[in-house]
Amino acid sequence: MLAQTLIQTTLLAAVATAASLPVRQTTPTFRLAANVTNFDLTPSIQGQELTYISTADCAANVIFGPAGQGAEFYATGSTVNVAHLSGEDSSPSAGLIVTPGGTATVPSLNTVQLQCGAGTSGVGVVDGSLQFEDGFWMACPRNGSVVLSFKKAGQRTLLGCADVQLLSI
Image (cartoon, rainbow, N blue to C red; front, top):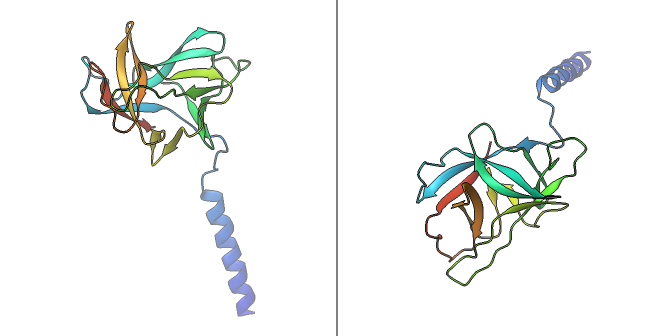
């Protein structure tokens, strides 16, 4: 009798605990905010968020915008994407495209893009920040916007750019 009462009490406690836990989303979204680690820009980009400007069908430049107005991203295994490139539910998803390059010490002028379909494999959020290979992110002024660029380990920061960590918020 005591054992049956103990089992019932345990089951009731487990049900009550499970009911109070938040439901885990299967497709969590997040925004990405700049944490300047070196060479900040003027005006500062600290706290600005990644967003994008469409450039053509199924392509967009990834840029920094005001805090609180960033694009919503989601991660799938080894890529980071946006659900709807044009912002409309009927538009296709797009993945972050990172194109490393340059020499052993100087990064390329390539910028991070969004393109319809899968993004660059290996881009992900680890320990709360966006990461790719062993490299780092740069925020670089270009054509009236601040674009996102990538540099590999051992490459210097391009003149006029800021080193940033991209934190998921």
